[in-house]
Amino acid sequence: MKITNITAYILRTPLGKERFYSSQCAFPERNSLLVKIETDEGITGWGEGGQYGPPEPVAAAIKHVLRPKLIGENPMQPVRIWEELYAFTRDFGQKGTYIEAMSAIDIALWDICGQYLKQPVHALLGGAFRQSVPTYATGCYYRGEDYLDYKGSLAALEEEARSYVDAGFSMLKIKVGLLSVEADLERVAAIRQAIGPDSALLVDANHAYNVHTAIRMAKGLEAFDVRFFEEPVTPEDRSGYREVRNATTVPIAGGECEFTRYGFRDLILQGCVDIAQPDLCVTGGFSEWMKIQALANSFGVTVIPHVWGSGVALFSALHVLACIPPTPHTANPVALQNEPVIEYDRNPNPLRDELLFTKLEFEGGRIAIPQKPGLGIEINPSALSQYGQPF
Ligand code: CA
Image (cartoon, rainbow, N blue to C red; front, top):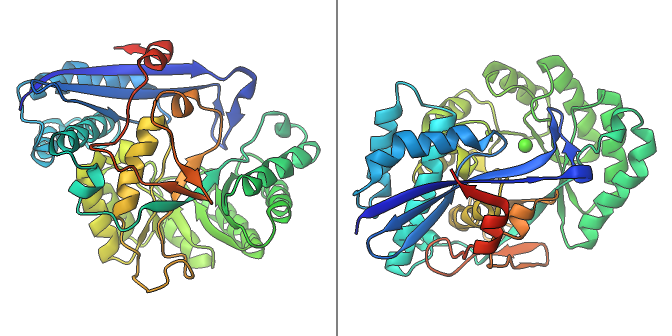
């Protein structure tokens, strides 16, 4: 089998009044970078690359730099192809755009392998530990008006938090970092009250803090039974991560802005995180994921993937979620929360909800692992042309 064509697609949809904010920025739109790889056997694979950044540079890297290297290649050799593309781009790549482009390509190649062998990707990665995975809702962002009057928006925030519990989620991840520590702790307290003591609460700052403010926030979070504190400081500040981690009993998570085994090697070796959060579409795709997972496992670091993006990203993540071993193993991983969990972004995103004919099976707070060959997805061509176009 040979690769005959590679096409990058840029998908984009404005959110209008539904826009929301993290500590870093407004989200006035949702966008995704998809790649389609075609073969001479008639098998077509799909992948997604990147998360928050503009998709154009990733599309350009695919179209102008990586595509010519791949036409005529055997798509059944994704690990070799990854290593060769990394070596080719090392002097100007290593992190960022090129690795996101390689992530999309790698995911599409594994999709092709699975379809050719008539196996789901998780079977090719070594086998699924589970048929469904516990799910956490990501929500309770800032809505804009809370810049000016967060007390006035607390009731709506509580209502949103309760809606996730009512929908069957037992875990919720919320945002902090846009307001003062005191104001954000009031929001955390309101949400904890709204969801009750039995739901797990996760808190994400999107690297809003310097070390001493992050420690002040972490100390405040200790009162609310927070299961992890995500991205307390900037991704480059490894010693800062370590200081925060050493100063609090709340587990520290991070890694959504980290790339490849080399980035995670440093994050883990320097004792920055209890929980590593590689994003499959950012960190290098399935081929690199397996190396990061082995690295984290060998240092006793839990892996919980970061998931954003379209339905392609979400379904791809389910395959790695299937393959994460309980860490550490016990006969009752549920009691110790040693089972991996999948992030399910609940912010508005038509690219997640409408792009695929394939429907997500969410029940009892868990999402079913796909069982069809490859990624197990079917793109809806009319949604694809509604939201995107080839680059
Ligand atoms: Ca995050």
